[in-house]
Image 1 (cartoon, helix red, strand yellow):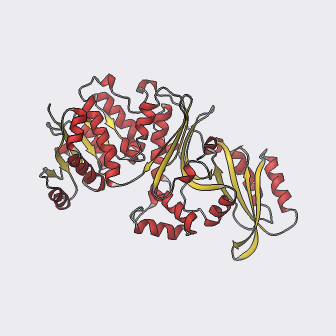
Image 2: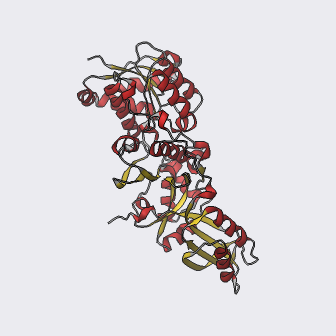
Image 3: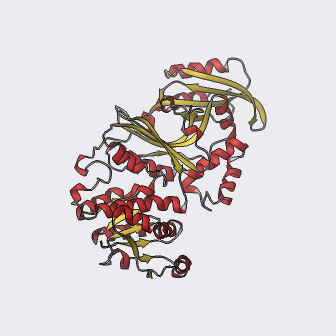
Length: 446
């Protein structure tokens, strides 16, 4: 049977991993799909670097810096985009689609920001866009949501979907490292880039959570409406206090359906210490899905890596090879639901969400301050679930007291009002710290 002819854009970490996996497992892959997958042309920025990689692998594949020579080539059926970025990559992907090529991409930023446009173009031209590698690379989470759980109504998806931040938080918890020291360690080990902004500010996780929300709930991609907080302001003392209360702090991406709309948010969260996600450490990823029929399912695996990402890219290639000749109406919809059935459910403003909260309130050691704080919370109809008081020496070098409160469920807007009122108390000596608490239906490890 005729080989599936593939054009590859990018031969960096992911591109070289993809080429390596295809070469090493060519026989196994051919047995699965009944024909070989062959990379026939590679578009790159640097010919010298790419030539060194292909020579080292013992292959002679034509290289070009003209991406259109790949995207518009008559002998190529599928274009794999793994070069990253959202400008050149967007143009290359649209060129490939307009030329009638199927596209596979690992580019979560591209799809989170331009996915609606890209998927519309793909429908118009009757081609597939596959992107399993864009979220939690080695975990087949998109296939799980889009296919394995297709008979379910998804209630929520929550996960650790950025390995860099999870490594940093693990270092802070297990070794008492400061954020700065943990970040330096992540950079030394290659988990964090020289410029780690996308990771530590939560943007990378926000891209991924946006894609998961669209697939889970059948809504358009709405990255601009996601609420995103990173971990740069997180302090080691809050990790310590969380642990005393029975929680661990993780950067969590959450997409949850409610009566009012969709919650779409990324931020540090307190997770019960016996919950599955609380025990995902290092640079690993973990995702949980709550659906009506299957209940809660959990997924764990590497969230980064050359061959780990390549695994998902090659799986998409296998799917395309199997379905290439199928009528476009029989392709699996890009966002799990047919385009005409996408529901314009609004993504809620962060003030409308309802969850539990951790508050750390640095105060002077004065009589009556606790009563004043609890009254201000009660004024906003916020009840207290747990509380600690600890002498502290981190308040600008002066000894004081930290009042740590975990609330029952409350609306974020009410918490904001309560915090503003508490902050104005004369006895409050520093900024009130607020973190969200996510119980995730108390799914525990046994």
